Length: 106
Image (cartoon, rainbow, N blue to C red; front, top):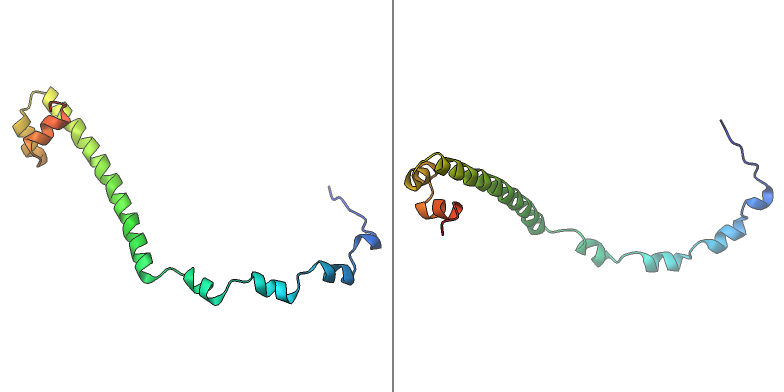
């Protein structure tokens, strides 16, 4: 359904009303950022490189945490199945101390 609204002439602002409501040229320029502010907001190449490296590092931390959680679960399962701490450590490429820590023995 289409709704129509009747607009009366007195609903339309006059040019004088519009001009009075508009900011002056001086107000527009006062509100505009300076050239220095515009260039300060642009990140440098070093900032961009650091930002990308930080994002990659965060992903690597998450992947490492997930892999560590999987390895800890595998250690618990292997120990429950009767494998020695030394053989579990050798299979994972970690020290026996790490295996003991993951098993809660230290």
